[in-house]
Each structure stands twice: as C-alpha cells, then as structure tokens.
Length: 161
Image: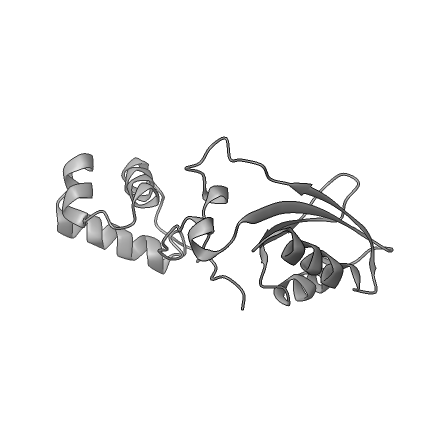
C-alpha cells in the first residue's frame, strides 16, 4: 500500500467484505447495506484501489469445469538454503501450480497443484523434481473440500495446455 493512505475504517471493512463476497455487487446495493450513497461507495472503492487495499476483481470458477479434476499439496524440500526468489522462478514455469509459498517446519515450500488427472499430476511432479536444488517432495492428494465456498476450492487460472 502507498504511504500516507487514508485510514481503513469500519465502512471500508464492510465495503471490502461485500465485494469479497460478490465483486459484482453494485455500489447502490453496497451503499444501502452500509448506509452510504452509491457515489460515496464508489469514491471509497476508488480510494481503496488507488492505495492498494483492493488489488483487483476476479471470478471464481469450479475447477472441474475447466478440466482440473486432480488436486494436491506438495511439500518441497531443498538442498541447502534455496532463496525464495529462486523458488518463485521455478514455480512460475509450471502453470499447474496455482499457489506457492515458503513455510516454516521441515519443508522449504508448499505448492498447491491442480492437474487434469493423476497421470498429469505425476508428470507435473516429475518436472518439479528435476530442478537441481530440489532434494525431495511429499505430496498429499485432496479428496474433497470441507469448505466448498473457500477460495482454495475455486480456480483463478486457466487449464494449462
């Protein structure tokens, strides 16, 4: 966020909560819910975008509708201390990796992988494992989502070619 931003108040929180629940909600609908005019909501949303609080709007798509029928989390263990910058370069080369983060504990990174099927997942895993600094991986396949409305249950990336 930019320095010197306006404070993030309770109305901003209510507006962002409404947009996170449904980014297509009109400013008039949000205004009616929070006690502001549509114009005042628009001004606040514009400010929240300018200051980096709101970074964009997206659609959540059922992964299976896009051909993503297999999902897993992969722990990555590196030789030595692999810098996060190098790990980021590697994961960008794999469109099946929908999220990646460095983590505490034994693993160096955790990857969220979506694939067409188990064979495709295995191929992705082999591509990850050939990186010279990756010592081992441990995979956990997702069977079902207990919170189907969570962002993790949706997809924001197209199916890889």
